[in-house]
Length: 485
Image 1: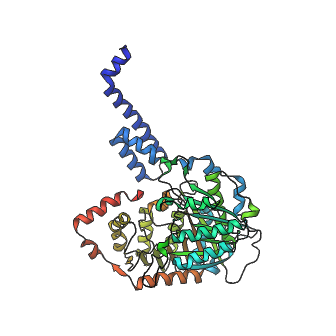
Image 2: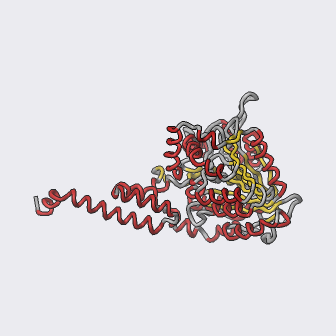
Image 3: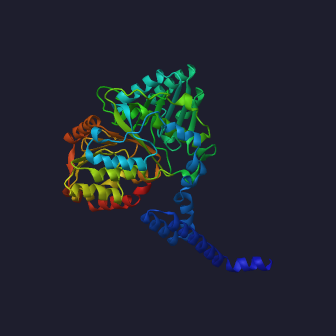
């Protein structure tokens, strides 16, 4: 045994200790210098310092946002930026469509969103799978040129196979098709729907994966977007995945509920822009503009409304949805309605909601009585008292699970899409939402929320305090992990 081996054998515990301290110090400095959320920085530094080696390893795997630093994510392709351009002037005055207080929100949207606000959009509200999936399949059946489909979950079940069969028929007609599914969401059914799609020759890719399987550093970053664009003219987005749970199987059964939206107009091109960016990021393929986008948006149909896409995600658009909601709650003057399956807003959004209630704004928050994610529901119950104490009214839905994500302000402005009011949607997921300036749309969505309220039960502080201590403790412990649920 040489001198080095002898030295190592005698002092390896000290060497290992020194290395762990060095690695931990480097990781802690990185967390402190790169995290913009002070709570996240404190949390990661605490984890690293308590266990320098294993804490640093966990931080390397789950704490570093590589997507934000990825050249593809930062630059994408210059040609893709043209996807969002339409031959229409951006709308400069939203007051005739909404109310005076929304002029400042329009200005905020110009700063936050990658897209301009355009009028000329027609919007159909689709309730549940029994309205949404037939409308999507009808659009696919009418496709003559291109179909772009993106979903977080695309199950290999009866409803998923109907959509796959419609895509296969379009493929046989010579329609160009691209399907993008999240690498985590595709695992919700076995075997995955990708086998059926590829067997039919449909170009399919998984977001954030590679041929060897899921990349651990990216496992916590998911595409939660739901987008369908047909011939560049008709678009669908909202909160609905492709799953048979949202379809009524018999007159005696009630399916889970959700809300989706069908669009015609310039906002469809914004949906296509987001899909093209994500497809390029995943496959490195650039989709030709003349095949995938409409060439003419000059005609403005009657009863059209101004709308704009809000793209958010853990890249250059991080916090876009968060900023829009902060601005919307700040300008409210009469009534805020929020329906969310996972209501776990961060401290800033909680402050905005609570401040609105203390200003005398009526704030109604609708949450599910039956939640498909028990851990999220436990965390919600640990935090929900904060809004009730400020004067917000919280309503617990009865009946089947409602996955709808709807926000309206003063019956004049609406915010719909894939974002939940939870840390995952606000910081980790790639999301797509739409802001709509329209009394008509806002009133219709408000009526839907009010209909839920009419059959819901109010949640009170007395009910929360009546929960047994051990369950309240469980809820608080799970709430501490809410950013990663």
